[in-house]
Length: 305
Image: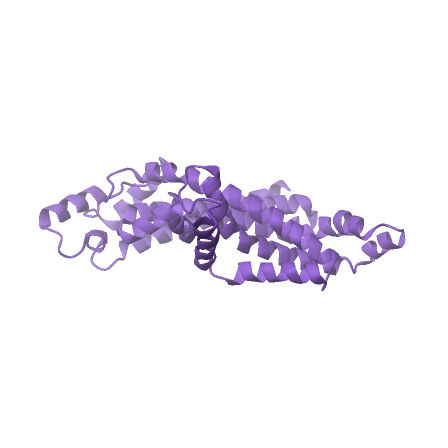
């Protein structure tokens, strides 16, 4: 077990180092240089010289890379050219908002996804299964922005049940959580349903049924424990991907999170902020995948082999 964890940690470290190197290369091969890309070709000479000096672009590439790694080791991600603030402070300011949205969306997705998957497996090809399948397909297939607009129009504008945007109260979390969680719950439901129906045909499940166990008990206590394993991986990946930033949803609902910060940095061509967001998002996803692998190996020891 310790060897498995050590191996996964080494692999994750290599991935993180690779992303750091790739990000640095991409930010330094922009035609002209990063200052021209951010501020346009009409920038005056004095401003150009000042920004180049602030970003250290007058130094050789090798020296810039050494400084870049040194700053990262100290937790320094650079300074925003537009907002004149440290990138780490900007990210720390909006990350809790993304975390709140992530938690609320995940709770909705996991509860609805697991319940609908179990119900679909209990009544395959029946009326309930068809309703659950239709809802899952809609959530997976329809673009997030379209679901957001429809829900805003119906529940916020027409029925006035929830706020249409904002992020100052729990009620304002309801719509964006449903928008994000709908598609994720559909993924969980479809995978869980398929696995549970397949497991129900196995010999140990049939044996439990032959002993007089009720279908609900067999499905929940026998099939679910085995079928949930691949779903756990999906759930962990969903969690880490959301922490990386739900750009579209945050922008539509006016939520000041990582996604909104990314869009703002991209629009304003604020490369230090964009670079910092990419690194933090990558770090979160890699660590999340590492935790998922470890949990998976604990639940199913065969994975270690």
